[in-house]
Length: 366
Ligand code: MRU
Image (cartoon, rainbow, N blue to C red; front, side, top):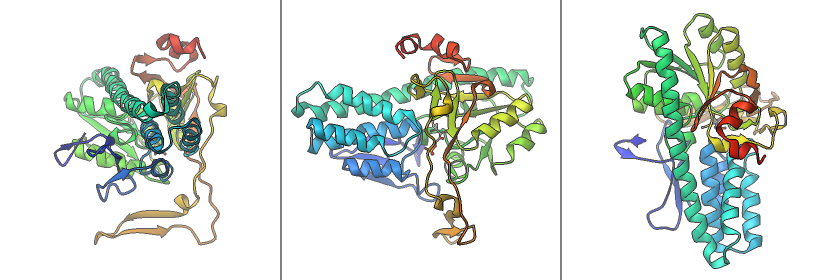
């Protein structure tokens, strides 16, 4: 996507060949800064501290992290230690383990002298594949958006509600849930997006709003509890979110609060779609009950960071100093609340049969 006239992906090899570069998403929307990652520790830190975030992007970052590790220690021990370090950074998104496993499988059979180069090539291929997957999700989603707009009689804006950030910043490019929104907007459908702020880290208010604004997509940021009211009033035509891990039966794990939106959507007859790249399906889990839910630092709940009117970035506490807090990062939306899964291979019912129909080669080996 374009930032100030320059086309960016969210991760790319540095021109000098000695690092990988990322956009520091903790600084957005206030500052656009890029950061060089030169070691596996720097890559692990970038994932854990959420300089990069979003399921597909943390997978791509981990893949490049293995390249960085193998440059200094290409031994089996070095490979296993780096893989373990990267997988331990965040527990919920399955793309992280998927990407690490893909690189490890690629490099382990090779001589140690050839491993770093093979890891670099595989990380690039994973990144390119992510872009192609997201473009295809966008195209399939666009057909749904066209139908939804036609069903409205082509009248007024198509009101779409989204949660968290599943845009290009969460992937290598395009985004998952936002890809159909960008394509619909570019195709002339008057899309208007309700952007859940997505406490505690405000990925909606900070990142989705920034992305949509740069692309010229009309949107409004709303506090997380607004969706129910909007749906009762007929102000939401469809919901669309991303996912960090979807089990084989179509249960969808995504940013905390997604489940409550899906419940409100069901109660109000609003379609609830999830954009799902193939690598985000966990075929080893029959349902979503065993998906590990990340619990992060409680300070993300008790404090807020923002920019003052005179341009300073400040963090302030919003609770009493002694308040206890809990910070669950994700929740699981049962498949029965999901209208459809928009994948790179087409739209599937949120069920084992629906997913197996699109991915027969993976479903039968699971
Ligand atoms: O904690 P985050 O910001 O990494 O959470 C991101 C999400 O929940 C996204 O919706 C999900 O990763 C899908 S992104 C294509």
